[in-house]
Length: 323
Image: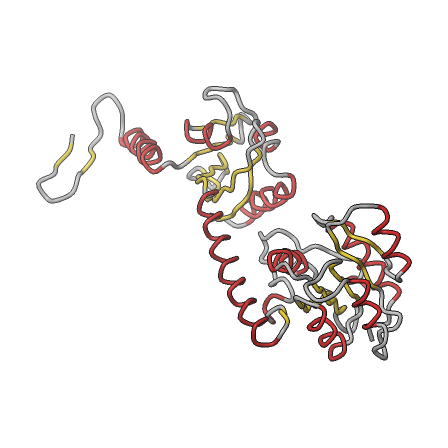
């Protein structure tokens, strides 16, 4: 029954079921109205149950029997450890944990998930079930990332127009310290060697979006500092003033070619033997041969394979005195 005379709706249990069941039904209705997915893993029976929204979120046909192993198999591999650590922490410290992770649906679609995870216990404090309340935040993440990229692009364009190059902000040169539930920072060989200063990388590229992509990826490296320029003249000036440890040069620049720019940079004292890498969309073998003959240590084709880039940077760091 409901009493609405006081401006609110009071729920009273119907004769055929108690207050706890009424609360459960109300919770289910609220979750359906708000699009919240609920996942319950019962510790005693080791059974996993989903509400209809959870099936939609994970892209699994409604009513399909699910196990914890099958559900975890849909989680993005890099995020599995995050969920495991969250559950372990709840065992040690009662409460609730908010976290973000990704799901790979059976059809290959990638979904961003924001979840609230808590451990339900009985009156004696014995754990009964892990309960997760989740929302699909894929579209929100897309909009947030687009706004962030737009803001960073505007700042970069403004600095390029003013100073002639783009330098990572101080807060972006290293990844912020992670909390206990954040994805672990990427560990690199160079970072583990206790370098006295960061390795300086100069990237000369006329395409601003390529510059921003390189900047985003390099921010995952704690041991790397990046400066960027959009043409040969700016790159030559930054190289002379900054003396980078690594040169990454685009093949075709507005005012010169990467090979010609390297020849000029080699005339700067202190940079005559600096490792240089050509980064170009030209994939013809003859271009790679010309770059090698000009003294480039490697040739990176676009789109860039950043695993290869990291391997090359690790090799350079191991052979370079960064004291």
